[in-house]
Image (cartoon, rainbow, N blue to C red):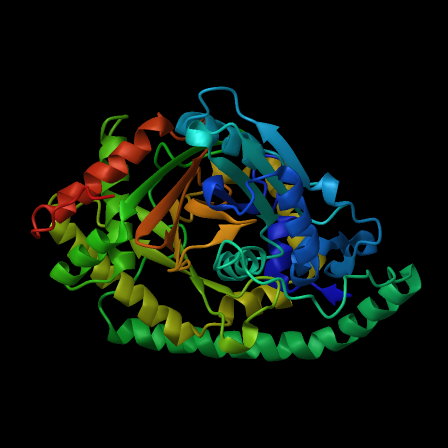
Length: 469
């Protein structure tokens, strides 16, 4: 039994039918490398064999009565792999658009909370004989980095690895009784006032440090709710549109080196240029610059292999009021440095500490109020879009012997924010997963071409020849 951290719980309580809080990944595999060929049965055996290493795949939630305390993870004694692992065939020709539509359909459906919070859909019939896999896991269980660790436990670094028997097969622990759950909750709640006082004291100290820092530095990142309202902001419905694209990582690094910025700065500038042009063609972009919400991993070496989230967040000015793309990149890089400096002043644990000291009934009430009152339609948006970037493997990976040729990450939408661009590196490529609400964001199928154009607008002036990917 493991109680959820406050940040993990917030992804549960702020979830609604319109904003399911799971993260996803769509992968494409080449079965020609699989010794003996690909079969769904072989892939199923692989997942079953790896279950002892896949903790989030085996645990389900148990809620506390009346939300008296945060939920707990428990082993699911009724676990059935076939309730989570599904097989499907795409209609011919099984092209990129078909894969995107299937991914959008999977991503739009909330997970069943009575079971472990994950699904994997194996897709046969892809163009060229490829096999796809669309996987989603609730954000309460993993973040981007722990999701990458989960992937590493499921996939292999060679097509036919030596099979190493695990020390023991997974056997679920007994589900705690209601009395045991209540006793554990009461004990935690008894200690909560002291932990809350300590957490609030540390948060207050961080606020004092931040105020002093902001007085000493003229350049500061946007505050929450500073973002202007755009066509991408407003009430989000349950419909999803998913689009994929990719960029050569070597080209992105070359642009970053030529401009003296980071790869993440280039990704933010590409998103800024793409959204600026997109809004311009659909009613115009606002005069104030757009703001990106950027999740930041605060995982340490000691956190390796742990479930849940180790996250902070930054708000970054996207300088969409600057016309020249290269000048805009420099402005974004300066804004990103300011946001990172502020994040360091606050400390890596501030966001999770605030979530930990917020009582579970308050978090649950916040989610309920939003569902009933639609507060996001009346309030300025926290940010205009979410941009998440995390490193992936630099070596080829294999699933049941089939080489992974593409890996597109997908993130959730937030209340009032209808666009999420999540980026992961794999080998020499950056893979972009663009998730949007088509009832909020105009013409989402045009966004991949917008991103490609925005990168070309950056690469050409600094002397990088784009287009190798």
